[in-house]
Image (cartoon, rainbow, N blue to C red; front, top):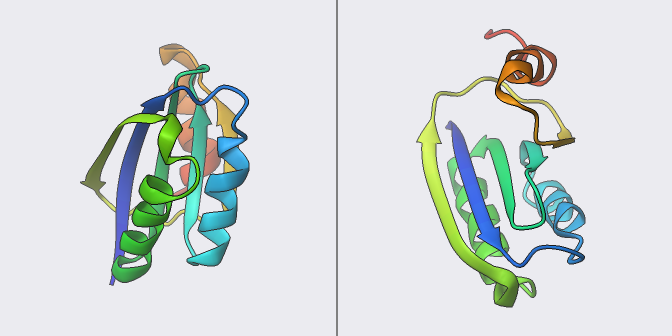
Length: 109
């Protein structure tokens, strides 16, 4: 069953290449995701996949080698939006967020 998780990670993530780590895990667990790097201290992920794969992906991110750099890790289940692949973006201001949603989340099927 397909699920969608919104994941917010805060910590000392500067210079840890957390993007690469998230992308490697997404590939390993067959997860589609949009990675948004807010600043040097936080990352937001929208991730979709099979529920068991998502659980494994979350565990991979929480307990892997970058665990010492993570201070908070929150997961919220949201509505499936049919993400495809892995995309990385920098955080956009509120007035640009509708553009991000249109470009990367696409239309519901």
